[in-house]
Structure formats: C-alpha cells, structure tokens
Image 1 (cartoon, rainbow, N blue to C red):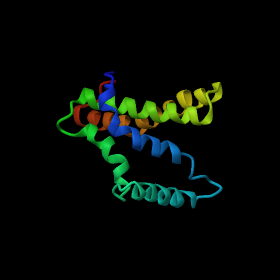
Image 2 (image 1 turned 45 degrees about the vertical axis):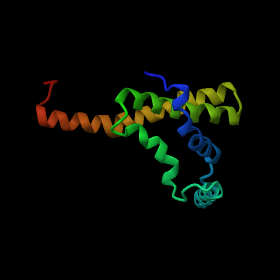
Image 3 (image 1 turned 30 degrees about the vertical axis):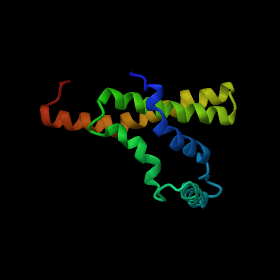
Length: 136
C-alpha cells in the first residue's frame, strides 16, 4: 500500500478532525443526536467561513477518485484517512488494550466483512452468472 506523503495530507486533516469529534453522537438512547450533530457540523463550518453543505466534509475525501489521481495514490489516501480516523478516535478514548482491540479487531474486521458480503459477493455472483460456474 503506498503511503500518502506528508505534504499531501493537509486537505484531509480538518475533515478527519471534524468526523472524529462527532463520532458516537447518534446513540440508541437519543436518536435526535444525529440531527444535533449535523447542525453542529454545519455551524462549525459556517463559523469558519466554509461551505455550509455537509459535502464539504467529504469533498476532500472524494478527490482521491479524481481522474488526475492514480489508483495507487487513491488507495494510499484512503488508507491514511481511515487509519487517521481510527487512531484519533483511539487517542480520544484512551490508548487501552480494549479500545485497540475493539477498533482494530472489531470495527475494521466488521467493515471488511460487510464489504465482502455486500459488494464483493454480489460482484462474484454476477460474474459467475455471466461467465459460468467454476466449481461444478
């Protein structure tokens, strides 16, 4: 996996910090927190003179898919973004074994499983239907 060079990381830093700040606000005990969270993010961006649309947060992330960026750079950028969000969240909660295990062994593993189940498996099923069964 290619690394994102230090000088290329700056567009991601502010959106990462904002995401980490508001992680966990939408709780089962208070589902209205999601709306409050969105309102606070909008207000924070508005106060900074940034575009009020929530897309601002993800605009820098989506640049990794820009046609001028290589696939390898996009993979490195996404690795940097995901790793940074997890690392900053663990620092915020405290560097403890259970936090490391929950996020590295739990969250990342579950993300991988979900992507495998929902996207990769569907793609493989379509390819099998189009090209024929391999395991007969």
